[in-house]
Image 1 (cartoon, helix red, strand yellow):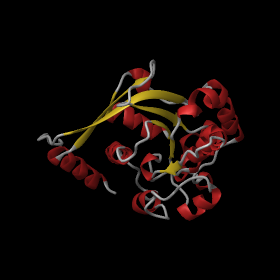
Image 2 (cartoon, one colour):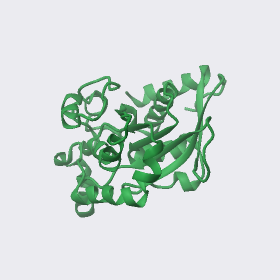
Image 3 (spheres, one colour):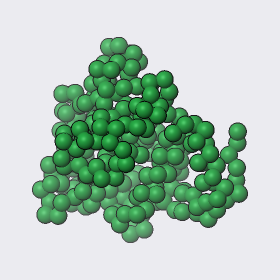
Image 4 (cartoon, helix red, strand yellow):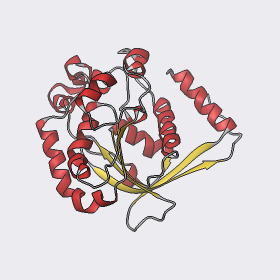
Length: 256
């Protein structure tokens, strides 16, 4: 997917509708049935995050961190998050769905933080991987994913049926190591996320994803305040009341 393609998609969406508008606030009260409770979490520390502290941004281009995995400290962050956010007793009883980025560090974070306690529930809670939730793709090997056939073997608890391509066509083949996704392209992915979410009946959902996706979602797409839109730290979770509305067609145009 190119920048030109993404801009054309956005122009068509605005010109011909329908389009999505969304808003989010940090939870303070019980949500109504019309509002989704979404627990957004950024992945825990991964190998490229640790390497950045030593190598700087050069770590992001190092092929040894391809589809970066969690560090030991990242695993410890997940364990700490279970206590910090009172996951087992405060969140788990109401969670109906867990959505994960197919990038390994986010998938690991979801399973470490929510997997054990959710699989103990009488009715199994689905864990579904969505391509649209991945990190900014392209240039950096750490942000690209392994083949779905490999991931499915590594993480049998994850449902990869929504993934359209086995190989990382979007990240490694289309963008490659010479280009990186733009915010316009990630914005298109947030709309793909809205489209998909509106097909589901669940109203209490966990989304485990990445800093760039979260930053774009809450700073360029969703109407919200700074307590939601500021930077997510590793393994930070924010519980929001999230509304998504499909509007009628608009005659706005996208500036060149």
